[in-house]
Image (cartoon, rainbow, N blue to C red):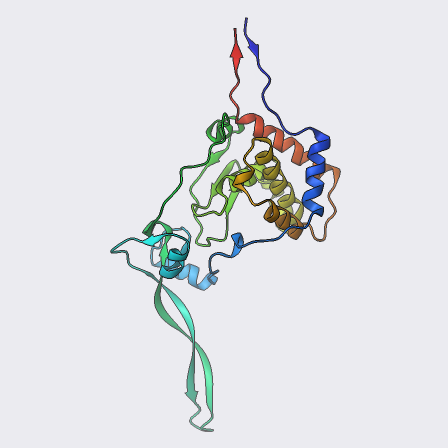
Length: 264
């Protein structure tokens, strides 16, 4: 006779609520995570695409070095349009004016043109990200954004994590929280775009609780999580539905990563 052993599950509701409330009230700070890369204009992003630049985070040679990565030998830089000021003399008035123009400059390298000491994906003891993906019917897809400040994204039942995310496992849990919380369905898209704060609160709080539950708190900056939530919820009051979604999503993600253990 087989008996299903009890799996670890989400935090008990009172403790879970207490932690969620602390995310909203204990002072947090936004660190460097979302501003490590320069944000290029739509004009330059389009220019990169026209040159065939891979859809990956891009940075200058120096910035990649600062981030602990080296541009590989023989790699060629992609160009951007850099604004410059040009003096132009009016022939009639002889007045000299400064006019903005653009200069093509080879400046950027994509992530795949660099090399570094990449760490293997983090796996908590006894808990499997692959098992969770399968149980939750979520597919992990390549990250295809030029902006390295975007840590990850999700749509439908798909999620992507930036290959140079500051906290990749926490980002994975955040994006899984969006999906499990029902934020990525087509009927929620407009609401997400117009009223994003509560959705980001639910996803980040879910990630925070997931990491606490499975013993992976070293994979996040707790103060930064609070700062992120407080930024998005600065004009919002959490509802009972928010709390319910967070606790339910946490339980589902946590449980999905553990193997069902039986004994005779």
